[in-house]
Image 1 (cartoon, rainbow, N blue to C red):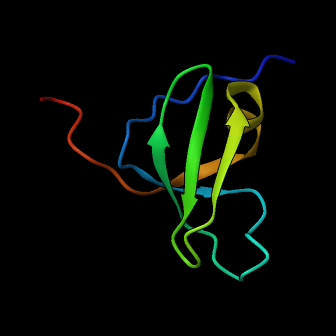
Image 2 (cartoon, rainbow, N blue to C red; image 1 turned 90 degrees about the horizontal axis):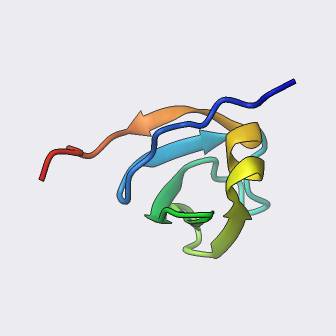
Length: 69
């Protein structure tokens, strides 16, 4: 089954399938490309996910930035 590609931008706040061990489940997108860098909004830890893994774990947006610049 194909996983749809989620259109995200740097600065978006997203929710993933599972929360971070610190207890937070809000992530800020720091970089977008073949892999996506996320920063935990609770503790500041940065993680890197391959695009496929991000799309598979993605559950929704908490906040969005204006994509028009």
